[in-house]
Amino acid sequence: MKAALAFHRPSIISRSIFFSSSSSVSLSRSPILKYYPKLNTNNNNLTHQNQILHGSGSGNRSIRIMASSSASVAEQARAPPALPLPTPPVDKFMIALCQITVTPDKERNIAHARSKIQEAAAKGAKLVLLPEIWNSPYSNDCFPVYAEDIDAGGDASPSTAMLSQLSRNLNITIVGGSIPERSGDRIFNTCCVFGTDGNLKAKHRKIHLFDIDIPGKITFMESKTLTAGETPTIVDTEVGRIGIGICYDLRFQELAMIYAARGAHLLCYPGAFNMTTGPLHWELLQRARAVDNQLYVATCSPAREAGAGYVAWGHSTLVGPFGEVLATTEHEEAIILAEIDYSLLELRRTSLPLLKQRRGDLYQLVDVKRLNS
Ligand SMILES: NC(=O)CC(=O)C(=O)O
Image (cartoon, rainbow, N blue to C red):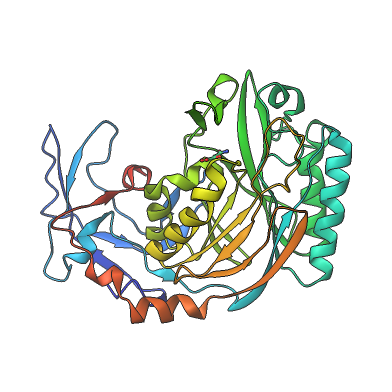
């Protein structure tokens, strides 16, 4: 494989793979996996042009990737092997993190988010990130009341209708924080990504629900009202390939590693950490995700409301691929504008070639969805 640290120019890469399972499917003879990465964002799954995947099927399989003559030990560390980093559609652009106040008045929240997105775009932002649960107070009592049917759209989802309209009118990409989503009798914590044409490019439902009990400090059980999403979400946008997580998803490094292996340039996490875990973990986790995976990480929190039932930590932040904090803020309402320079990805990965140095003979990350697609 041409080093994954180089930006990908279309080329066909061959790899031999063995699957070992209870049925012991051996793919040693004819199987050539040809990787030519292309994102299919319709179902949020990654697919490959020209991929011939033998022995696919569901169920638990232990996977062993045998080194072909050209495969290095490092490439075995991820199954399937990491995709080369795609050439980003832009080298540099401005991102805006809109740390906004959230009130019990949903109409006001939508109007307020609208004006802050407009302000960010007027200041040059090409990508705008909103906070977790920005149209509703963050509480199990409120989620069912404020939930919208995103798939029905229009009047059934005034929050996402506004995001779609603005992304088209302002010619920007919006990673729309999250809102409670109603789907049948279930409620999800969902982030919608809109492209510059106003189309919904991806929908991420929070995969890891925030169930926490620190006696005397904080107890919150999202699972009382919410259902967990089932799919990692990575999407090609006009400002690069973006992996999406929501708040608690930030704690699970495997998700970020899967996004990195799928060629993400940037990870976006709308989040609402709290006054107990925020000071301890919020920045630490973002910097860890960024430095481990050598990519950009952006987070966006609601502004802090001292009297709210759930008090958000704030501190929306952009971290660079060296784990460096590039821009951040305190807890008040703010628009954080910062430049993302994708040339740094290649620079950092060349200086510190972690991708080449992994020990696939000792450990392995398995991207279950990609392997089974
Ligand atoms: N609110 C969350 O989902 C996560 C959080 O506050 C934490 O992990 O701490």
